[in-house]
Length: 289
Image 1 (cartoon, one colour):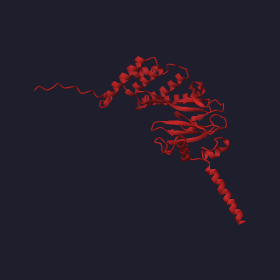
Image 2: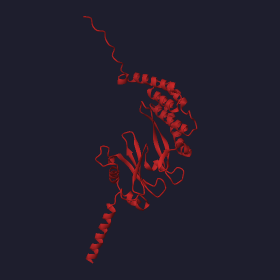
Image 3: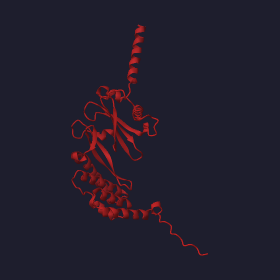
């Protein structure tokens, strides 16, 4: 009896050792291994990524605190699972990485700027069994800081993701634009009540809505009137919004340049001690001897 019990304990230990001895790289990424894959913690995910990309001693090796989220998802609806990670790219930005594994065990990776909570970022928007990506895309001005975010939709195509926002008008009509309109209305009320600094929030929300209308083809010049209004401002931030909007719409080089020049003058009037605003010292005439 004692020997039978001992053998049973040894069998359990040996089986557990086989289970825990498996690693992400050696397992097929399919539904039969899904529970095992879900059992790996963040440290195991980091080890896998670093081993795959060249080792943890590289200067750019990823650290556990840079993985904000990870999730196993059958993105393409084919019974094979992908490892998706949301990673930090500094204080302002994040990016989404997708690791795929083929039948021969070869791992490949795709990365996309933007993203948020993985459950909100990865959705099947058209009901075809394949997931789209909703990525918060930055619209930036080359010479300045980021301007605003807007939710771009990427759809799967031949195992990759390509931007296809214009193909998903229902998503914008039913989910994005109604919420944006509510935020704009509330912010307009705050501006009308004289609450400070909300004009910048209002400008950002307005630029996001206008961008979506342009992308959907509803109004190719959406935002042009707002840009002209901001061009009449003496506020460098609103002038930069005007500059960015003229550039986004295109075909308004003179207005874009005027907004840029006026923005620099307004900025230097507000912050005269900034290095870019300091005038070079005038050379003095040599003293007579």
